[in-house]
Image (cartoon, rainbow, N blue to C red; front, side, top):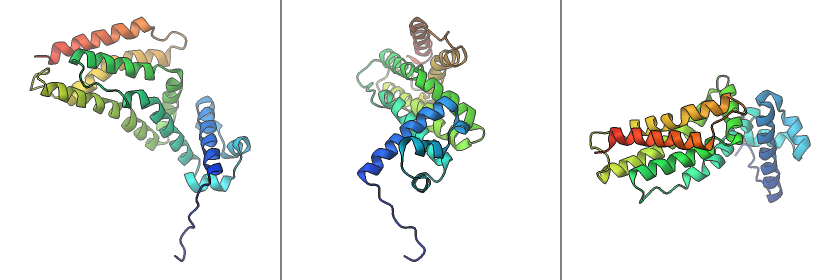
Length: 210
């Protein structure tokens, strides 16, 4: 049609180069922050053309968003594959929390979250995407488990699963994650993680169990 943009199809070689581009961009963004990375440098490292990058991503901000979404999805894979069906209420809470903290305390995730926090004020869409695909999605997964447990009679009928999921999430995550992010070299030990989760499970059960 007159005036329309031509459709650009990626070859297999082009897709492989784009994958290398995003991997390299992720490394540099985590190492230097948003302002420390340029499209020209990425092209020199992995090849291709600046025009191709701008065609598929719009600009550096679009590439940054795509890289951040990739990283978040990859980090969240163990949680998205978690099967809590058949577990008791206590076992499910414990398994969920242990899986979540194993993800959040990875050095790569800590660097990722620091980067998101640093950029979210200037680029609100980045912060919103991180929240929706991170904490909000995590709490929704837990809410579904709690709702199923309520249907089995393991949670009092007047309890709202959504708020409980958020409270349990924050009770387990906040202290451990803040310590890991703010105290380089003095993060929580495995014993700290286990004890925090056990306390969170006990407190939650005391408030919602029949």
